[in-house]
Image 1 (cartoon, helix red, strand yellow):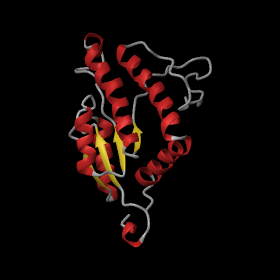
Image 2 (cartoon, helix red, strand yellow):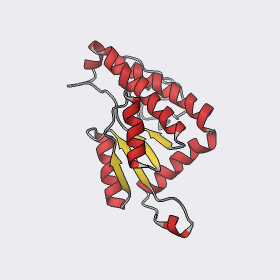
Image 3 (cartoon, one colour):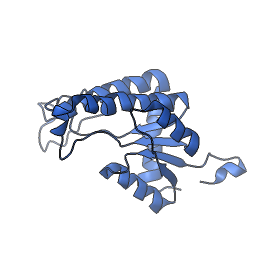
Image 4 (tube, one colour):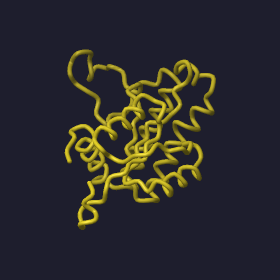
Length: 183
């Protein structure tokens, strides 16, 4: 960090969506602990202009999305609020991906584990985990359906528009800077 003035790498500055959620809040705390500059986005995922305004104002090096509709008090809320759930979890997330692509920004999208269930290839206590390229196999709730939908679409979007090497770079970069505390 800070090497940009000497012709090195660009300084990290993260724009995080999902301040009130568990993952979004944790991302902010991790950034604070590691001295990484960050701001929470004030825009709503379903409002493209507000996302563009956030990016213009913050000038991030990376965007993290941990936002989405989970329902209150629980995901059952999504069953009777399908339009709001689609608007944020599907359209909003894909809009953020598109805004990031147009601004040449890396987007790290946190979703949910509620799109997979154990099956004959992934049995309980087998130690065999689902991988990012696996197709979601759980759609037992409307919430899970929207998350599975965006999981598939964002995966395709990344490979079509952002190229494979950036996809790999996202996870390496995020791991090194957020979880391994590498400077």
